[in-house]
Image (cartoon, rainbow, N blue to C red; front, side, top):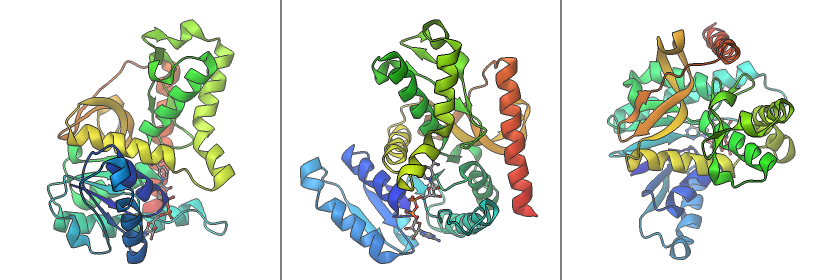
Length: 303
Ligand code: NAI
């Protein structure tokens, strides 16, 4: 069973995709009980059409998460015009701390996927609070960035998006690092197919992609929802997919005491393995800056 905490836009989209892809039964938990119940009821009424015979329950009772294999946390507040980034981070950190205490109590054997932003900072906070083994707790951010990178590569070349392969590492935010040197179309490096100007444009679009959607409609919903479901599938089915997730580094890539996006193998045990890639000098420098940005945020959070 999967528990999704936060029945807002992203949590409910993720829950519905988990049902639609028949990945698992879902418990949807939100502080707003009516919202959780209403979303669950709405989804259940679609079940015959999507041929889903399992269960979807909405509640505000954390005890309902017992026996979950995976707990996905999307609860939090969004940014309002009068809140600073730091205020937002502090409020969401408090929400994350209170939620993971419940996870430790009721689903101590589960894996935790943190989605709430700023996701790398929230993953670190959740790791500190739970003491969960590193494999069992990670943040989802770069998987979405990687999908966006793939989308823009395919659009530029007018080829199938399915044939693109690409990863983004680093912060899920402005300092993210699209790995140009490892991006390909059916194994052909994109550097053989695109000019430097085209690649620069794609990298820029990838970095601004989330903000571009938020500027137009206020929040991102479908892409994160689907990506959360795909990641959940990798864990429940043990597919050992290679994806970038936010994980606490312990010397890998030369850094420690920070949670940041790096390529990993995602399977039954959660983060099964961290893949340490050779990085070009330029990429290594960008990754170092991304680590510095996150360490600064963590320092601000504890100040
Ligand atoms: P939303 O405002 O629609 O939903 C948030 C939900 O959390 C609300 O229903 C609220 O009642 C609930 N909530 C707040 N505090 C709670 C608590 N203590 N316990 C239980 N429920 C609680 O927000 P939306 O659009 O769904 O976004 C959720 C989070 O996901 C945000 O932090 C957003 O920035 C983040 N996000 C992360 C992405 C990623 O790639 N990591 C992508 C998109 C969004």
